[in-house]
Image (cartoon, rainbow, N blue to C red; front, top):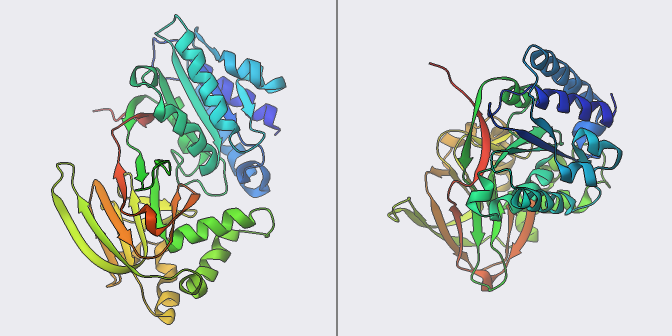
Length: 370
């Protein structure tokens, strides 16, 4: 199956979709053709099976009369634009596509149409696409719906771990509801704010993200796993790990936690039950904040594998709780990561804050029938 076949199949699914019945549907697919879901043969074959199943489901449903690709897709997608797909060419391209799509919707006299934005790549493609949408006026965002397909190497921000599960949101009765994001702000004017839509964290895991991105394409296999192993051994030799002063607040502004701890990492999710680093269960239950205390090397090696299963939650090194906003400061530089993109926080950037935003991103959820 080629990228053209992929675009054609998604277009057929969209043209039979049960999403927002009664509203004209305009779709745009932003695809990163070098993402792991396209280039890793075993994953591509698995995705083909999911796509075939979704096509069969869609074929049993009536074709929508008012459905088709966006003008932005037709103009910017080259030979695939007529099918609604735009391949990304470089970093930042996905964001430019979404801004053009927002301009198209704002200029349209048809206020009833639903603009379906489908991202087909990894967490980076998703992040780039969602930031302009988040920053758009609320009235304009309300005319959009987002579907994030798991077509990358790591797909922690996708709407399902398998392609078939994500496409079910188009083939089955569903609803559109706004979802929150995470915002990192610093004390330095012009540095930030930074947004994430899954997990935003500081410390060891941000170092892993930073090094994975730097070496991407130069190391064979899963370089994220390699850097996890390296970080367990060398992170606190490369970055001085000192105490962080943390204050956490709920939605009413009430303090729920206040502590000063030497932490290896501090991770905040849009909600609990979230993963990062290719499905590492850093937030294994309903609590959306996890801190991991500094520990001796042998203890790090012993606990490293527990993050895949979430069984680190009951270890004494773990601090888990719920919060809507965290304020923190430290004496030494520390890396932060936002859905796989990193930034270095320096002493002058503190105090910094991580907070859940208002519900703003229009995502698709499976409709639960009584």
